[in-house]
Length: 453
Image (tube, rainbow, N blue to C red):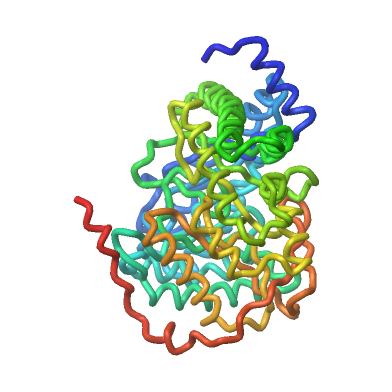
């Protein structure tokens, strides 16, 4: 890749003034050769492989960010979904494996190690069920480990038995971490149409079609896009989309450069750049503020879904031209706790769960980092998951739910997590019951568009 001097100067301006950073460089590692019939030998092999493969990740990523002047906020590891290789182990075995993974993450110095999960959109093995049973204790008692369960896809439909189970899993995980406001739930996400090369936690994992090891990069840049939108206050929407595309191109070029440089120095393949705009709690680094700058009185009001659709499409189109390898989720994230504009909209009463759900039909993921009252029934949580899965299944896109039923808290209160997780206003949830519907179990069949072969 050849860079011109004016491109370099513009990247430096974006870094210094507009909060441009690289949200994560994630090293994917296959653990498919680590399993044996002995739990102890398996744990030893897992620890050895992760610490060997990721030994230089922090050193290399830190040197690259210092040389190029672009911060890499997180350095992470993603592994093959644990239930795929470790099907022979029981609940206690998976808990022990989680602690082994946590020790490996500590050893190499990464922020998070992701992949404690299973793909159960069509059915379950004994290992899948054992891993799911282990989630509350495994994630609740570790620092770095994040988990996911994929319960639906366009091809398979929605596994409603697993959706129902996820409601109880989330409740149990919240109780296991009640002393930190249910923080364990921030490390767990339920997916429809999960992708294999997503570098963002909590849902990252190293897919079974991925190579032995790979570097995937997640970019950021809401502040850069916000300044672009503000500078085009008189533009029509078509011209505004073009401006966002050009900005997304520049941001992605920076991410591509970082990713390829890190991968080359680690002597592993470069995978993808994930184009997602990922907000932080910092002022001026908000996707909600971008939507307001487009002309909305506040996010959550009429026009919010259309504005988000424009933003998401422009980011994808602009970024896709800037890298040979685009993947992951690639769009705009709208978490509540991690976005000051979203927090303000919720506190003002302008944003509801129902409006958030509508907006997830056109953004990167789904109901992300949503705090709800601690007494929300498990069946209601499952119903929220089912609704998001339906959006993902019908629209052939990734959707997800990362919801936190905060123990002891009610709607209107604030739970503080700190760091990138920010502070979450507890949002009200409809008290209408879905217990009978969720209790039916079975599967919601795949839609007609799944027959695409």
